[in-house]
Every structure is written in C-alpha cells, then in structure tokens.
Length: 132
Image (cartoon, rainbow, N blue to C red; front, top):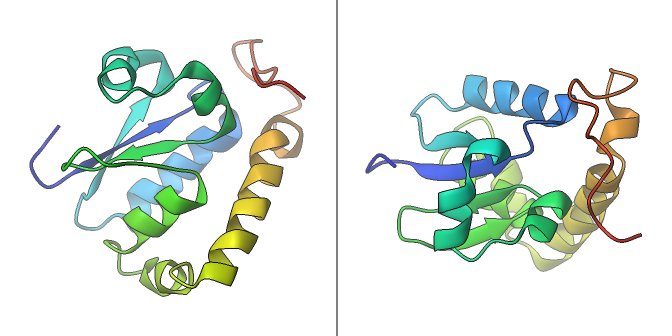
C-alpha cells in the first residue's frame, strides 16, 4: 500500500461494483484510494480481520493507519479526501444522513446484481453470499 493511499476492497465479480470503482478512480484526482479486487485481497482481509461474509455485504476501506470502514462509512471516509465527493462526505458526517445512507447502501448492496445493467455477472458466481 502506498503511503498516501487507503485500500478499497470491492467485489470484482460484480459488474455494478466494477463500474463504481471505475467512476471512483475518475473522481480520485489525488490517488487517495487504491482499489483492490476481492479475488486478490485475501492477505489484506486476513491482516485486518475482514470476513468473507462482511465483504459480501459491503465494500471495505482500510486506511493507511489500519482503520477499517465498511459501506456508507467507507464512502464518507474516502469522500473526505476527494474534491467532488467532499460535499457528500460532509453531509454523511451528520448522524441522520449517515443512518439514511447506511439503509440505502444495504438496499443497493443486497440488490446490486439485480440493478446492474448486465442481466447476470461475468463469472456466474454472483449470488450474494449473505444469509437472507
């Protein structure tokens, strides 16, 4: 991990997630986040005690200081470092906005394969690995 980066672990089997990461890279003018696909993040997940079930539920941001944030909280944390996301990140500092964002994130995460433009994922392994 570079000194100026955080690691963003995302589900690379999900087309919706891959498109989101492409957009994030475009927004990240200062290279503050290094996206790591889930398929290559085993060591990082083990080092920071991130389970596969937790990864099935949300993306995770590991800061250079070792703090781990998931879902809407991860968006808040990396958004504070990106000029175009900064207003959203400031809004997410408010408790009620973060609670709403968490609910929205859970809904999108649970339905990301259905709301993706692709009718199915590329690998055929897109069934969410979480308990319903």
